[in-house]
Image 1 (tube, helix red, strand yellow):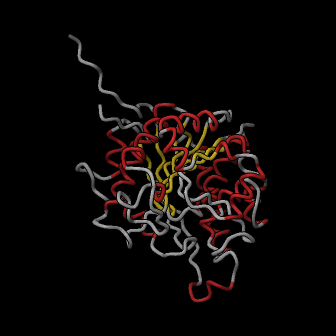
Image 2: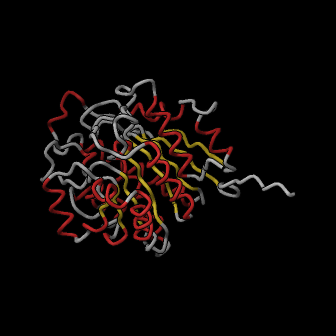
Image 3: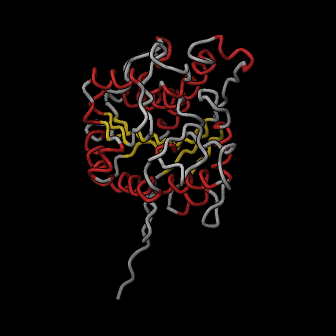
Length: 320
């Protein structure tokens, strides 16, 4: 009997790995250290770069994007907090991610707090816009991240990036790469929401996208499988395919304690892997981003290790 050929999901594909160590967009400091924690965490006997190569991918590590450092002594002087530094850093992110895509690579982005998504997806959207294509987005998160400077209770920018990409927020951020919005609402799917602010609910209903938000209640009723299938269908309606940004706080704190905005009642370890395995199987992924690992809050580095495992699931790692 002929033996089955070893499955190599990344065969013929090239990953561009890049870190974005920006952590001051969050209310608790430390997620900037998540970049190194994920890079250096050993699991299954190797580190994340070795595992990516074992899936058959070529890999280029671009190191970390140079982030503008904030004035921590005067952080309340701006609203949103550290806005100028976030804006300049986001401009750098957009240029770098667009450059990686322009080289024909699949960006794998390690954050940092979730404010980085305004910059990274701006670069992604700009790349596909130059090709005359829209690109979709699947957003995994316990939070909507759809506050604006006016609606935000905290002024923290990690609660604003999705609103920014949809065209709402500070003019300079909304206008990154010279156009807005970066994302058409019809190509957005959000999974895992369970802690939303009033202003975010209002914007969701204003945009008519409630049915594209798969909350924990939806997951409880329908199951992760059905919700992810619908999310893929929504995001893959974009001609350019879709990106994924994954906030580890979507996962229940029992499995991922190392994050700064924990909310009880999240998805399980296996549901997280299932969702990303389904995305890898679909084949429409154009970039993958994982954020909000905070090693200062972690326990025995389990959240950083889990983040590395999830990167591999998104890139096609299977049990058999």
